[in-house]
Each structure stands twice: as structure tokens, then as C-alpha cells.
Image 1 (tube, helix red, strand yellow):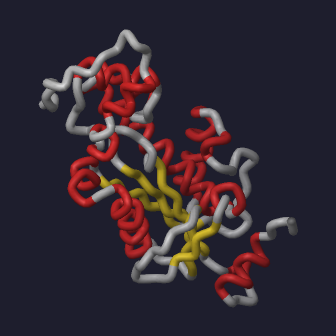
Image 2 (cartoon, rainbow, N blue to C red):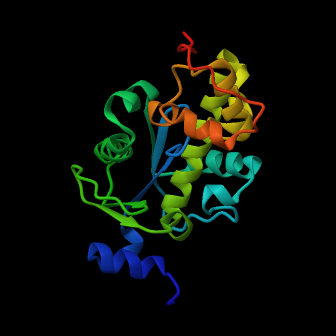
Length: 222
């Protein structure tokens, strides 16, 4: 496989000759697979020549490393925006819709010469968005967006944990860790839980230890 080169990518994808002057907006989302909490995405336009030794896919960094890089991105970025799709909106309109809508909103909010994001999506936005598999590891602006979004959502989940500590959101960030699934089965769902996952609680129950049982009479926690 040929080595990825940012200049060649920008030139070929966006049809420009002076790629170093091209304001590329990178976008990425965090929380798509979470059981609870909002979907969060960030858009970042980096200044020419931006470098940082920890600038890569946020999943490959420690929490401390992400916070350091996010602070530097916020300080130096040409543009940086964060958008949230609340849980209630996800439950009402669907996770698939939310995953596209979050990028549509960011594209309308951030001014740039071109837009790209991680993954395989078809985004109908006010500007054309190019999607690149492994973009969060290849394109610095997407890496920066993934880090900014992750730091923002983690902080948000820690705040939500103060309201409902039984689910352990401060540590699991709303994802389906065993202790989180066990808490759902034991205490019932919270309004911050996504229906797409709660509707499959019986399936989740099969993955839990036999000592845990689902009380079908459990009602939504207020």
C-alpha cells in the first residue's frame, strides 16, 4: 500500500495545486456506539505546519495526552467547533440520522476550503464532505477533531455521572462496559440512555452473569 501523503490527498481530492494554503476542515464524532449520552462531533481547521507528537487518532492516546493536545488545538486552530446531538433527539429521530446530522451542522458552522471526515458516510451538507476510512489516523485535522470531541464528551459524561452515579459514567463514559450493563439491568434505564440499546436489554442480559436478572417491570428513572 502506498504511503499516505497529505499534500497528495488534498490535491487529488479537492483539485488544488497550492495545497499548503488550503484550509482543510477535519471532522470526527465520538459516542456513536455508547449506550448513554449525546453524540458529539468536532470540526477543526489547523494552521499551516501544525505539528504535535501526540496528534493521532484519539483512541490511541491516554486521557492526559488527549487533554494536552486538545488544549493546544483550541489555542492554535484557525477554527474549532463542537456540536452535540442530545440523547432525546437521538431517541426521537434515530442514531443513523444523528450521525449524519452532526456533520451537517458542523459543515454549516465552520468556514473552510474543503471538508473531510473519518469513515464511510454519505453526508448531504451545504458543502461537499469527503469521507476517508482511517482518516482519524491519516489527516491531522481529523485527528485533532477526534481528540477535541473525545475530551469534550468525556467531560460531559463526568458531569452526568454526578446526577446518576449508579451507572459509572465517569469511568465508562456511557459505553457498554459490564458494570454499566449490570447497572441498567439492576436499576433500570435513565433518560440519558438510548432506546436503540435499551430495547435490546434481554439480549444484553444473555451476556451478563447468570446471577443478574432483568426485572421486566422496571420503569424509566426520572
